[in-house]
Length: 453
Image (cartoon, rainbow, N blue to C red):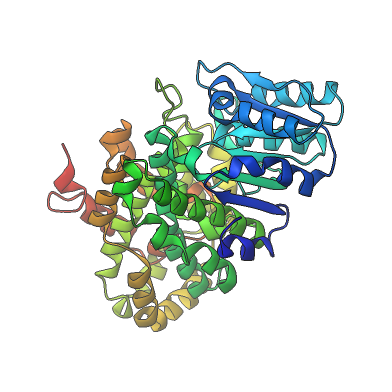
């Protein structure tokens, strides 16, 4: 069984048909497989660690239920498996050579992404048995796969079936639970960014999808200490929030419900390879999102201390760069970057001219009393977000992920350039406030300035 929230979200999901999320759910794997694929042949895909945790049990359950199976495809347990195209194509080619078996991914983010993309390239569906509450990608479309050292989200459909056994998830390495918590807490700022985008008219709010993510969010985040101690109930709440985020992205056919400026911070660092070579475990996506969430919550706090109803629109319009100058700024902030062409495309896709800027800022001033109250209601204090993350064991400061201070500082200016999605970074840039607000954060008495080691 799954919660009513998950059952409701499945009604609008485009790919996922069945989710069983509860303690002991691994025993439901055969029924989920049958509901999704009838009497098809199965092949379990895992690594040596996940096979021990759940994969062998999945094989046994499917065998007992009478399903035909190919021998499991098992990666070594060490070194840590990486989600790159080489591993993806290893799975794809093996599946292609062995008939039409339906892959059953048993693992967390990396294995799910590899199997998801491999199955997509073969034009066949798959299902996943989760082994950690480590990210929201189980029920999401798309897979984060590295090519030539850089990770990007690549097209592929979500799983047709998903099994999440809360007892298995609670027993996962605590660092993985902390990573999932970091990914989920980012929905606070992602939600605030959607409020902003809706207000300025760049992307309208879908209230039903909004509720799928934001409705269970605070409950899912409410017990970081219990999560740190491996509590099954708290892990179930976290897992539900993560599964709901993935289903919401399916329903909206976009990552907008679950990804905003905090993910732009994370994606920039990921695309530039930060944390890829860390041992014994690579720096997770959720850990980078965690720091991005603190960074953006602090920026929102600085913005909300301003009276935008008094914004000098004439001055902001006068200072607004031409398209040619805006392109130069992208190059100046990213000298020698291998990402420059994509950053240029993404950044300039949301460029507006001076007349459009004036209209947008005039509207912002009128809406600010209502908009600012919505944002205050959506967000938590940055110091509280830091404390919650530290309690669960997730990063909350640049030093926690070995990120150089200057590079972290520059991320505030560079992050908006990697995605055409409109966030608060674009709003404060258009209002002519970005430099001022970031300087305030890094001043000796500012949020980050007081934390500089």
